[in-house]
Length: 183
Image (cartoon, rainbow, N blue to C red; front, side, top):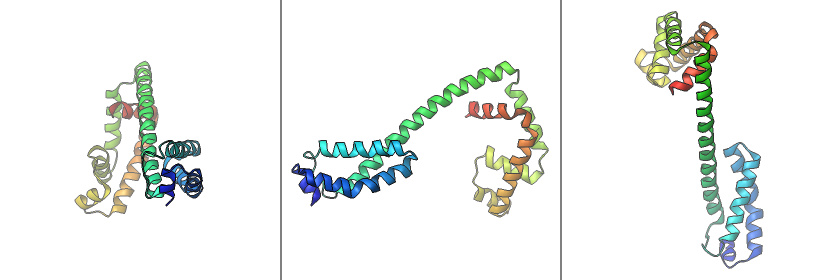
């Protein structure tokens, strides 16, 4: 009913739609974006477009229409954040590579240090770590293949990360850089 009234240009119908749905749309946008400012801008833009295009589309179900429009706004917001993050990561990678070169530590040295640290791990812990991190297998896949419980696999991963972190503490900043550069 409100959608039909809005289509005719009824400002009271628009106000009723705004009052009825603004808060829930804002809450949903906040949860999806983790930003009150972005959520508020998104919802305001949504309602502004709703009013501007009120006579172009007859909206039978304003709630469904608004939630769908918000979903696409959130997707656009997240895509923009990803593009921005990738650009920043690329910039940071270049800077990190320069710093890595300046320190005289090369990737071969890091690789050798990692290999030595891995060789210090107990056999099963090393195997679980390699399957998890190098072969990108899930915890349940590893558990099934090795005859372990998921919990045991999680334990081995935690132990390996703890031991590797300790063994590679001198290289920690460089391993982060190498990880970024390798991805």
